Each structure stands twice: as C-alpha cells, then as structure tokens.
Length: 295
Image (cartoon, rainbow, N blue to C red):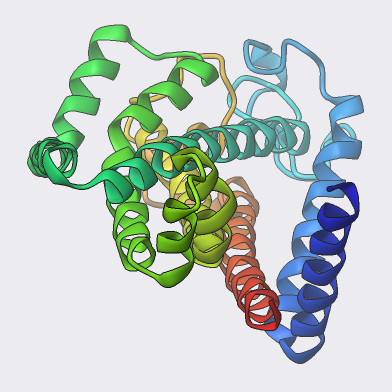
C-alpha cells in the first residue's frame, strides 16, 4: 500500500511539473505564491503579538520612510508592513480553513447522496435547494451584527456552514456520473463495502474536479472574508485581516490617490492569492486528469 501511495504521489508531481513547464501563467502563479508565503513566514518572527490591539497616537498614520517604517504606520500606530503580514496570514488561515472544511463536508455527504440515491437524494436535494434560495448575505449580516465580530475559528465555522450546499451538489453530480459504471457494478457484485467503493473507487476518478473546486473555494473564501470585514462585519475588532486593512478606503475619497500605500499592497496580495490559487488549481486538475488517463 505504501508503494502504491508513493507511486500516486510521484506520478501526480511529475505530471504537475510537466504542466507547469508548458504553462507560463501557472509557473508565474507558483513563483508569486512562494515569494508571498516566504514573505509572510519570515515576517511572522518580527510581528508583535499585540499588533492588532496596538494603539499609539504619536505614531499613527506616519507616511512611508518615517522613523524606520518603510510603508509608514496604520491609524493605530502599528508598522504597516508588519500589520500586512499578520493580516495576510489570518486571511490565508481563514481561506484554507473554510475550503478544507467545505471540501470534507462535500466529499462525505455529496458522495453518499449520489451513491445511495432514492429518498436520501430527494430529501438532501430539497434541503440544498432551500439553503441556496435563502438570503445568506442578510443572515451573515444579522449574525455578525449581533455578535459584534467573531474570532477567526468562529468565522471559519460560520462561512463553512453557510457555503457548503453548492459544493455538495457538485460532488453529488460527479458521483451520479460514476455510480452506474462497470467498475462500481463489479465492486457491488463482489461484495465490496459501500465506503470502499466510494473512497477507493469513485473518489479518485472525480478528484481532479474536486481539486479545482477546492482552489476556487479557497480563493472565494478569502474574498468573502475580505468583503465582510471591509463592510464592518466578520472578524472582531483587534483581529488583523486584509479586509480590515482596506477599511481605510471607507474614509475620504482622496485616500485612494494621496495615501496609495495604504491599499495598493493589500490589493496586490489579494490579487496574488486569488490568481495564484485559481491558476494552480487548474494546473493540478490537468495533472490529475493525466494520471487518471494513464491508469
């Protein structure tokens, strides 16, 4: 089994690097993401633990290259670059947390719904249809307005619970396309347990689409967190995130032109994250499709 797993990893990595060699956009995305992650990882060693609650009136809103602050300071007096590092780290944690939790939910429940069908599928789809027509933005606004901000882990749970239906429906559709194939019928006749058929038989054959969907969910989750926090919802006060850093744009319109350093770096990081994850997700999908074609 260990040999099989190592072979799977080797084949996927070979195909992944082969795809990157052909795809200049994918290689660019990988380089940008590696540079950004190194910047965040190394910078974490210099970020004070209280940067989100720091308050220094004398050092507030300093322009770039003042008192050793390369990009100046925030309105709380914290170094802008260090705040940016802490904010990017928190937003990435939220993105990965939400994407991973939604993917687990969608794989487990989506595959079971598609495999068993019948009344299980009918009930599940009615619940999903109801969930999808709910005004989720209003629900989120009410939750966050009542709670007056939540922690990072609470936000991950809330966004996951709110956002799972579309992903479950996708996996259910993918499972339905596989459940009547010969290899599934043969496994049923031979007495293979249903969970082995799902996770050892069907899952590898739909994994390429799931990987691509994971990348899209990851990028989308970072965008949702940024938007909610920018609008004044989401994370509680004192928790740094890319959305909270963009709240400076809620002030005077002249901020966009006069104090560009307060939003341009944040926007660049958001672009790199969304662009990088989506593009690499497509590269990983093509690599997985190649591996499946060879099997």
